[in-house]
Amino acid sequence: MRKWSCLVFLGSLFSLVGAMLSVSAAQESAGPELFELEVEYVYGRDRGPKMGYTKPEVFNPITDPLYRAGYKSYRPIGVPVELKKVDAMTRVKTMKTIIACADGWFWPFSRTARNNEPAGLEVEILQEIAKKHDWTVEMVWVNMATRFGPGAPGGAYDQSINRGMCDLVMGLTISGDDHHMAPNALEFSKPFMSTGYVLVTQGPAKKARSLDDIKTLNLTVGLPAYSPMSEYAAANGIPHDTFFQNYRVVDAMIRREVDAAMIWSGSISQARLDRPEAEFEMVKGYEPIPEMRWNSAWVVKQREVDFKKFIDEAFVEMLETGEIKRIVERYGMPFFPPVDQ
Image 1 (cartoon, one colour):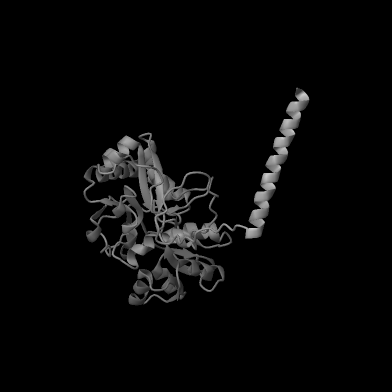
Image 2: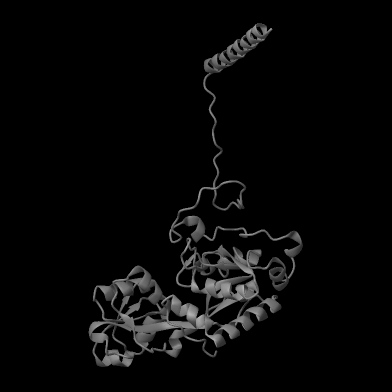
């Protein structure tokens, strides 16, 4: 009986193999079957989140075209249908999460941080606010420079807060040219700090404590070209040389082309990160010239009265306790309190 079962099994196996060989031969005679992937163009398409494994991204936010275009057009977390139309404060309290939009590479304020790297001082400030209520923070990365580019005013806002992607937008300065605010129905929060152009010196300029001292020492001060600071220097007879953008002013200092410079206060942190060999330092106790100093704030939708009040009160408290000052200085950037407007 066992012998008969074995023979039946072997017969069935040979029949199956024969059938497979016949199919294979038929396929070969008809030519190999080719599978072609459908061509897809990612620009302008809302692909949204995907299920399953996705290979980790390795990119440089400065040059990656999708991120610099503000492409991340979906929330990092899902928002229940019943919460999509409610006010921001109700949604935040219910989800226990604040969703913020910020530039992907605006060091030291925000950046798409890798593991074990600081996320940026504004992100940390928001994280501290959320932590006090046992909430979390989720980020949506946007190229904020596009708010002045094609489609402006508000190009970046159309890709972020106007589409309901986030509760607030970071990385903004109250500079008086915020013509993009009205059509987008946005409103600034209270300022949480101020930034401005500061005097940095090295070598023969170390004795200087002000721009007047630079004049007395008969030195030339390096400035970023086409900036408010270069316009101020030209109007006030300050000997200067201009370089395209703050980082090139820093490079000129390193090459000893100039020994004094007026650079944006945020550039000091960037210089310490990218140019550790730099010897220059900000003049101790230097306060930016009033005309060259601006408040930093976040924006929310004008209709979000309760949420704005919540953020404003958090800033007031953190300024009083010195929390914001400690966070800012931890990034190697000078902290200046908000100025009266």
